[in-house]
Length: 255
Ligand SMILES: [Zn+2]
Ligand SMILES: [Zn+2]
Image (cartoon, rainbow, N blue to C red; front, side):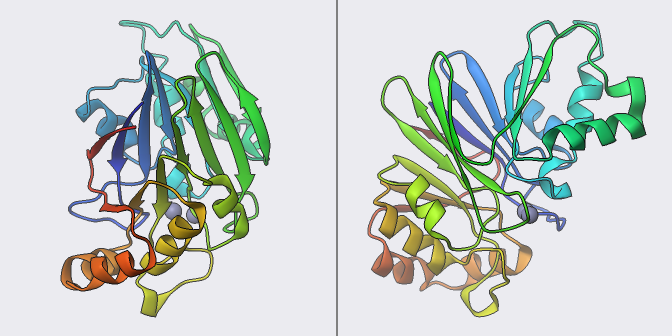
């Protein structure tokens, strides 16, 4: 599997971090986790177009994670060339209602013209596909927030947390995973309910036994902490002794 952090930021504009979006390439299929505003173009800059995406997985429906669904569906009506292959959209309870409400606002301009659009709502449990399996757990953030564990047929596994606070579910979902991608919103001394801090991320990594921890979803205040606090990485390594990476936009990882 090949992972690309498309946007490592949040809903707050940043010069260096785009809105949340993460890309996973599984053999010849493309999966995207969350589509914050501008994700469609940011993916294009990474070499992936609206024609390439097979699966979009939504962790929850806060605008910084979901707004660009409209842009994707609008672009997919363009017919030069037209999109043919189906699009699978997976998310928590409320996904279908979310789309129905978008249809009320945007009407035909986001209705598929040349391809099939499938929605799958799941709050916890397992989904099986030809080349991979998805396990989902409900996490601690908004009313319906989920995290995804992807296991490929060659035995590699990755977890994407979306937004969450510290909870047993994210530890369970991440058990012994190769790569754990966690949101890292705020510095430890300015924690906000429903979000993680660097040391909480390290604690989850340590408890889960993951091999590599990738941190993303940095609010500007956390971004300046990771740049200015020279002791931070050492402090985190005292909690979790695996590999720790602060993601940037367009960081690429092989899993
Ligand atoms: Zn967020
Ligand atoms: Zn959120």
